[in-house]
Each structure stands twice: as C-alpha cells, then as structure tokens.
Amino acid sequence: MALNLPALQARAIPRLDWREIFVVDPDIESDDVDAFDAYFSRFAALNSGKCLNCDAVQGGLMSAVLGNGFQYGLRHGEGFCRGCGYPARANHYSIGPIRCLEIILQYHPDELHERRRA
Image 1 (cartoon, helix red, strand yellow):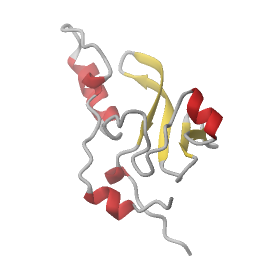
Image 2: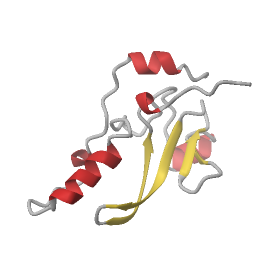
Image 3: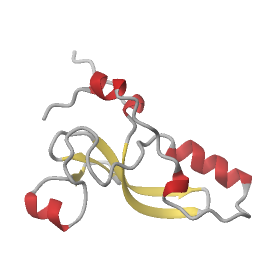
Image 4: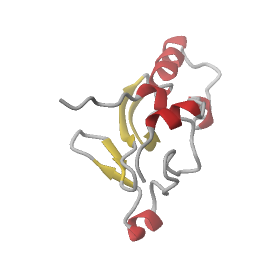
C-alpha cells in the first residue's frame, strides 16, 4: 500500500497524550510535564498497535511471523512499517526523567513532509 500523506493529514488523527501510556504521579515536576508534552505530541495517538496507513500490526510475534509490522531503519531507534513505509520510532531516550523507553510510536502525519525529488 502506498503512503498517501495528504489523505492521512486530512483524517484529523489525534496526537498522542502521554497520560494514556503513563500513570501520572501527582507530584510530577512541571518541567517534566513540559518535556513530555513537547516530546510525545510529535506522535499519533495509539491505534491499537496498528499502522495508521495500512493497519498492519506493528509489533509482537504475529507481525514477525507474517513478515509485516515495524522494521528498524538505519538511524538508531527509528524505523518504519514494512507494509507501507510509514515512519515510527521504537527507542526513546532522555525525556524528562525517562532515560530509555521502548515502545513503537508512529509519527503524527502533520509532522511529516514529502521529499521533493531532484
């Protein structure tokens, strides 16, 4: 399936609210809240572990067996959906008090830009 960025951007996909994946300590520092808001807003809301573009399951045994899902790219932690090439990140480092977090998050479509060919 081809990646149709304008169609994805027109779908008004919500951005990730980090409070959906973390239990929030009532004593969390405001600097940490700001860091989490800035970092996690670059990603799309969780889509039941499926690709935003082609619905392929991104992680787990079944995606490995079927040969689809998330595949690491050349940049550490970055990758893409094997089914359609939609970009994601699986390794997240130094976000507020978090030193390392391993979770596949797909970038929000509004954060992406089509490359112009020379």
